Image 1: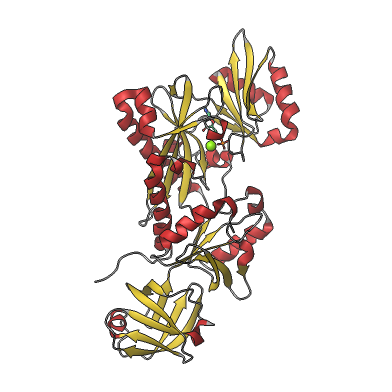
Image 2 (image 1 turned 120 degrees about the vertical axis):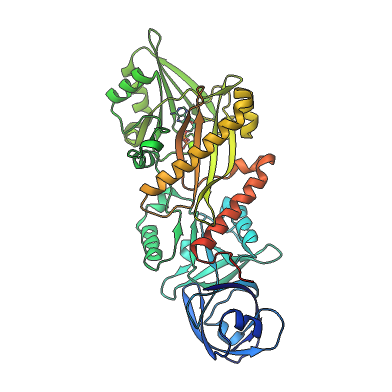
Length: 458
Ligand SMILES: Nc1ncnc2c1ncn2[C@@H]1O[C@H](COP(=O)(O)OP(=O)(O)O)[C@@H](O)[C@H]1O
Ligand SMILES: [Mg+2]
């Protein structure tokens, strides 16, 4: 097998011949060959090759072939030569997302700038494009793709189905539809690697880790769809619990419930930007309040042992660990953001008054010179958790965002794992380079999955 970089030129010629420089032919073990099968993503065509004298590695593709062989642009690209007489151009990398409203400048809504960042960073690694499910034509096996040109503006091209797909579909609800399920199955059936499959539910992740003895130590005791007796028992056992929607995010619908003997039951939550604290003499009154506010949707709640987080100025802090699979298919921690809760807030979300910090800033204030050691241990935990989730998850994973807490005894706890992690931590000036590294890791993992490793032979 050989992998090499070549310069693709798109010519206006109408002949059916592909001109290839001598150096490139030699590199691809094609010297003396007259016909070759060229592949791009899911499509391939037989072509006649003609050697030309030109220094360097060049391939000239005439316009007449471009109708059928949809090379999106000229420039440098990888060539993979696994089987004799077969040459694959690429990789063709698809970033799948969507938006309720697509404008010409923001076809992917609020995700547009992140997607642009991936496409820009990937422009030298292959053909990287973005698309929405509705851009796929299954009959022709093509995608009406979004590329960016050198000026950074969007251009549309029709390309074959890609070699690999990074899933950033934004809607939890749409993702459970038959339409999207069928779409994913179709990619799998065609052996097109697809990561990440979908958003996680909190309780699904806790369940995945149940039999992972080592990793499960980091999961606070949790019960899905608890009845009143279970919530009461958990309060008796742990003094305080978190009660949260299993498919929730951004802290929406989360309660912190506390039991103080002789004082009663307390519920803390945020609504309409305000932090509320309610006190109940009787447990049944607390339950009535929760049922009154949520009714049947409480069935999708999980009750979880409360963890006494390390604090700064009396406000709890927790952490986002952004982990990726790299070009060698190994999990690595790429960025860590620390978050200090807003005064009186149940969660650390910035939207609820939380403050973003670097982990060092946060931990040095609480644990002094033990900070470095604690961060290193938490990094190992994040990798261990990612590996354990992956072992038990039926689909391919390449990126995860963990919400981790560290308690006053330095024990690490996992509150949730996000399969479509947000990128707000990378807005911190000290974490911008980690943000770029995160994008690089996405691309490197795509190269790995598409078999286009960067192992160029001399
Ligand atoms: N069991 C818990 N103990 C202590 N704090 C918790 C617990 N569960 C959640 N939290 C706090 O609430 C925040 C939000 O919880 P999380 O499970 O991440 O839900 P969401 O999906 O809304 O982000 C966490 O980042 C953490 O600060
Ligand atoms: Mg969270």
